[in-house]
Amino acid sequence: MPHAPTAPGDRLLQLDVLRGLALFGVLLENLQHFVVPSYAAFAAGPAATALDHAALGAVRALCDNKVYAIFAFLFGYGVALQMRRVDSSFVGLQIWRMAILFLIGVAHMLLWDGDILTTYALLGVLLLPLRNRSNGVLGGVAIGGLVAPSLVFVGLVTWAGTLDLAVRNALAESVAAHTYSLRQSAFAFGAIALGLAAGRSGALSDPARFVARTRRALLPALLVGGVCNIAAVPLLRSPGQGSLSGSGAAIEILLAVGTPALAFAYIHLALALCARPSWSARLGPIADVGRATLTNYLLQSAIGVGVLAHTGLGPLGPITPPAGIVVAVALFAAQVAASRWWLARFRFGPVEWLWRAATYATLPPMRVARPGS
Image (cartoon, rainbow, N blue to C red; front, side, top):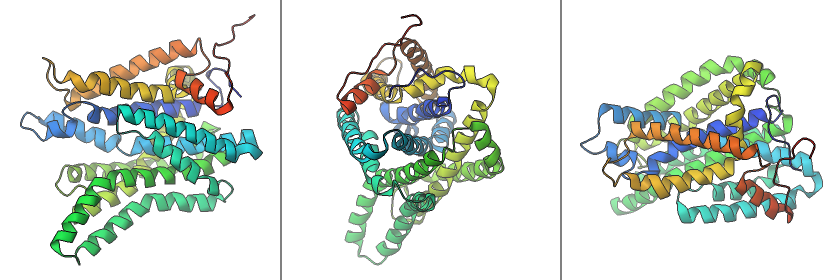
């Protein structure tokens, strides 16, 4: 059923805050691909400065893979909440919801080929056989999703050494073309499974309790996640990225360890703020972005591809990595303000309302009920 607008102290506030913060990370990450030339292409050119390389490295170390892992975790957490609400009709409803999400993703792909919605929709269906499995099984799936890409990659590197040159080159080309998407899908499925387990146990329902129980893991996670992701940055700039080489295998291993560690640290720190009453009201605007995640995600792509991709063709020149970070902050601030304004008047974001209407074959009330109305 439709829920009331998120207010400070609402039990869903922490999930909306996490979604909003993750969406900011997605914007920082995706902007490097929206602009023309891309950050990587610009950084490879003669005009790039040390600041450009540092900004690109920061985006890669802090955002790449991590923010999508958090989104996938929250996706699985949301599936668990949906299971509680609908119970016996969950399977059919989940398949139908994922079919609609898949179609939204297909439409998004017409705008930009970096869509993640179609992947989440497919993984949301693949999650169904695991819905009643133990948390131990789900934890094993999560670990498998994280380690599988590096294990497969190391196996391919070893196998490639036994092949003749032509076959090895063809295999290397195929691996380079598909490594990122396959790694992202494996990481996402692992994170979704972990989110399902966390959602069933209500792990995030009490931020203070979660922070207290996981406090000892924060510093190791920051250290391990920081070291692994920073170490991966120069390798990502090397010719060995995605190739059947030792450096390619090192990238996969570093990301398999560093991605969940830093993603956990982000979740912990965000929930630590949610657990402080003095921060509840301050986080409200970010929570509003999280309540309209789907709308804001698609809007970012529309602005990125429709506007920012062409900005570099004008007299101001290309959007460099440092300038891109500033643009991302400004654009997200605008999304915060717009979401705040919209959700003060309407119950759902436009695309969220459309998804809900198609799911239940009805027209949910859109406007927020006013006192006395």
